[in-house]
Image (tube, rainbow, N blue to C red; front, side, top):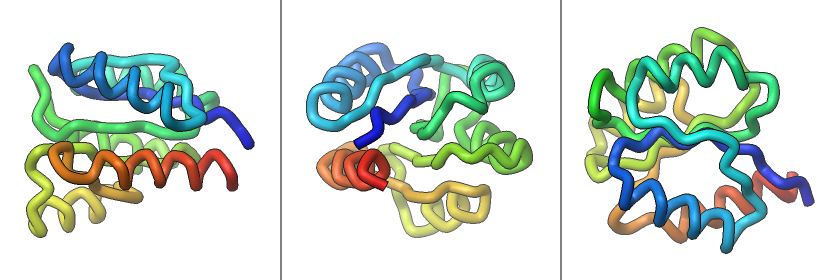
Length: 125
């Protein structure tokens, strides 16, 4: 099993800290970087693309948007999986994220277990 190296793009410090703790405890994942806005996320993608296995992105950020991060990651053609974790996982938002290159979209409030299972599958692949 491989330890996944992840970038998390999340602007809420409480959610970010809980997410890191949960993912690192319950799945074979190590967060190598965490940022809270689109500009920082794009810089991290440029710098870390070769070392990342997974990018977890929130849609609504302090500045910019997770949709911009998704588009940039798609255009960069990076091998890392791209996952959206949002409170706004409506059918329309899921479609838009998929069109922008998201491999999966999870609802923060009800699909955290599914995200953990997804991470486990990636680590075993």
